[in-house]
Structure formats: C-alpha cells, structure tokens
Image 1 (cartoon, rainbow, N blue to C red):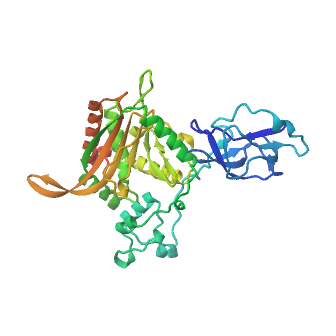
Image 2: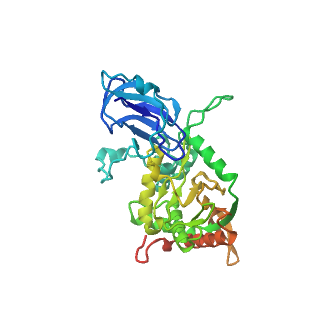
Image 3: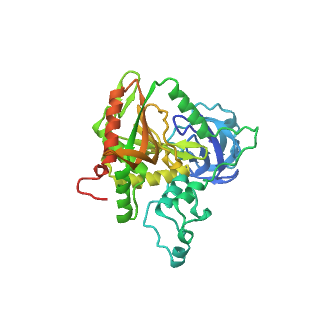
Length: 400
C-alpha cells in the first residue's frame, strides 16, 4: 500500500515549513527511517525520515517551497503500484515532532587533531580577546588585516570588522519573512501585549570578574566567556531566590525544581535561545563547554527542539556589540529574563578619589503577574554581588 509523505509538525510552534532539499529523487529506492528531505522549521533545519520502505514514486512539492504542516509532499510505493488513492485521500493528521524527523546529530566529541608544523605556521596570529570576539560575532579571522605588532590581529581590528550578513536588499523591495522571523514575530507579539512587564536596572563593578577571567586565560587552555560567568552567577542567584525561577500558568504560579537557562544567540535571520539544563548542578567549566557546543550548533541551525525550548530563565548579552544597556522581551512561560550591556570604562568615586572603573549595566525584565519589584530587586542584588565576588562561581576548593 502506498505511503503518503506529508510536511510534519516538528515543533509546537511550527505552522508551516520550507522544503530545503530532497535527498531522494523520483524512482529512487527508500528504506524506512532513511532521510528523504531537509525541512526548515521556525528554529532549525531537520531531516524528514521515511515511514515506509519502497520507491519514491512522486514528488509533489519542489525544493524551496513553503507549505503548511500536513500538506502532502510525496508518495512512496511499490514500482508497479497504483498510487492514485494516496494522491486523492484526505490527509487528517500530520506526523508529530519526534516521529519521522530528526536533526542531524553532531559527531561525538573527541580529541582535537594535532596541528602539523605547516598548519601551526599558517595559523592566523591574533590576540586571545580578538579570537573570542571573532567567535562571538561569527567573523573569519583570515578576512581581517591585523594592525598589531607583526600584523597580529587585535581586539580593535575585530570591532571594526563586519560579520557576514544576508544579501542586502535594493531600496523599495520587500524581503519575505523566514520561518524563524515569523516565529519571533508571533512569540514577541504574544508576550509584549498581554504580559505586564516591569524592569529593574543595576550597574555592576566588573573589575574583579575581568581579573578572574584573566586568571583562567593564564592557567588553562580554554576559559569561560563573560556570558558563561553570567549563566553561572544567575544559576547561583536563582538557587538562592527560587521565587524568580517560576512560570505564570494562569491558574497558578509554577515553581521549577530545576534551573534551565536559555542564552540568546543571534543568527542572520533572527535569533534562537539554546538552553543549558540544570545549571544549578553544573560547574562553571561544564557550563562553558556546553554553551560553546550549543552556540556552534545554533549558528548552523542543527539544534534539536529539546535543546532550545522550555527555559525557565534567559540571558541576552549584547555587550560584544558595544550596547550600553537594553531591555529584553519575556518569552512565556518564563517570568524573568536579564539583558546585559557592555563593560565600559567610566569615572567612579572611591575613597573620595575619581578613578577609572569597569562597569556593566544589566536590566531584569519581570512578569508582574508572577513577580513583584521586591522579589526582582532581591535577585538582582544577589546577581550583582556574585559577579563582584567571582570566586563564588567556583567550588570552595577550586581556583581559576
């Protein structure tokens, strides 16, 4: 009996999908579980698997087309089978997420291959800060001309460089919305209008945190990013202020037993928020390693749905773009989210003397249906205190 292939509903928010590419042609043999096509959802590119074995008899939707979930896109059957009934029968149910589709899983992590002598000689010379900033912005260091000693790329060179962007539109033209942009439009509209937001801003002294990171750079091959410090500090503060790690459910306020923190990652056509699970139980090093992996997969649109959904708290950091401060829109059911600006050199008064201080502004967005100002202020005060005493980010016996 012929089997119908339909556009699946791969996520709870997916209403339509883009058929990016067919991995089989009409007349090709197909095995159940084999990848038939690549589908772009509102958050990722995923493989559509065949439910049955046979021959791909008919392709009904061409590559690049956008169709609603549940739409018939192909037919699998035997070589001499009449597929007319499969073409005419009404489709009532689309496959749900978790059946017939999966993201392309990354290979298991292993030891990095050793660089040859020639590779060592041809590596792009760049300062650690320049490398970190280029990684955050998605900039290829080989495209930058260094202005440091011996042509070494320094942080300012990366600041002046521009990350690759989507093709510029001619004036007066319309750019069709991507699946991700449509999802962002729906989510932010559903949040900003009905959810009563309030905001609390604090300025944090980051001098000790920067010294803390410098110690990591000297003593370890890898070191945590500023965002990693923020995640760990938020996890500790949420452990001490569990009233913030909640969701407004309409009929109740749900307190979450586990702290799952989402980190906003900007993409060419929108953003996605990969989630680090159970942050309260993870070390700073674990968080740093996991965040790097998730960010790489997010930028290649290969995250699985369970890797970017159901955060209980989120962090959006625009400091690397020299943004002083901003506010974040809550994405329900989260009741709180923090927006982080850049670390700036500002004049501060210490012991009656004006000195140069390193300050960072953060703004906490809260859902007033679940939280009040005093609760938000208590969390923010603890978050600030931890970052100003960063040794608390490590277990008592560990040093950077």
